[in-house]
Amino acid sequence: MKYNKNKFFNFKKIDKIKQIKMFKKKIKIATRNSPLAIIQAEYVRKKIQHIYPKINIELLPVITKSNEISKKILNNQLNKEIFVKNLEIALLKKDADLAVHSVKDLSTKLPDGLILTAICKRDNPLDAFISNNYKTIESLIEGSIIGTSSPRRKSQLLNYKKNIFIKPIRGNIETRLKLLDLGKYDAIILAVAGLKRLGLKNRINQIISTNISLPSGGQGAIGIECLINNYKIISLLKKINHKDSEILIKAERSFNKELNSGCQLPIGSYAKLKNNKICLKGIIGSINGTYLIKGKQIGNKQQANIIGKKLAKKIIKNGGKKIIKSFIKKKYDNINIKTTPIR
Image (cartoon, rainbow, N blue to C red; front, side, top):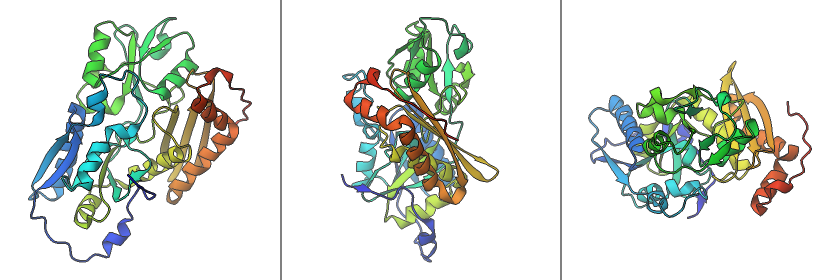
């Protein structure tokens, strides 16, 4: 598939369209078939129907390739696009009108003809510590086994606590919790937002500080994708777009894109609004946690993309380039980095 350089639609163009016909056909929402994905798609359906109660909306669960191969590949972190490719195909084939995603799973390069049209109001974007034996991540003892398949989480956890073991964990949230309860792990790390949406907030022992684990870019946000020329859908989704969340996500995705981030590269990014300005934090680390390059960039809300690019360039200059090269060559133990503080 060819890729579109623009990630967010310019709604000002839509404002010039004076006449948009009423929806006569059923709107179909493409979604993954997992419990969490269905909940997120239902959330979007309710948001739309709250504004347009007469619109008929149907969910279209799609079995993605990740579901088909997850049993065959234990360390399946090669490409985030695995999770969304079939949903995007459904859009391009016009089998669906829009697709609902966890933004953190979306590639920063969308296929030609598709656009990330709206971002719902972001939920808590942080990581959660779950354990039956320990109240906090700080209380973990030497030799504790932590379940996560995220290189980002692995890098940061090993940097924070060098005497623990990181063990891959597969499956949806419920499956991972069952493995924890069976004693396969001393603790696991999951996204706060996913647990809350599934009604499992009570399983959270601790919301992990960003000083320990910076989240994945887009974590906690629900994004809606559609055809770039489907003006009726774009106009409709404009009504549920949360502008501040969109701005923050832009900054994070711009940072990730500048670093050519894929699932395998340990990268974290988190943007907040402070005094009406974007404050973006970013990290890149070695997979074994030996090196962790951190940085921060502050700027105006109108400069979200520029802020992300500037921070990425700072981090690359400060040692990130060597980490990226070592990761490509898979020589994680031979990195020699001298860093200077980033302010």
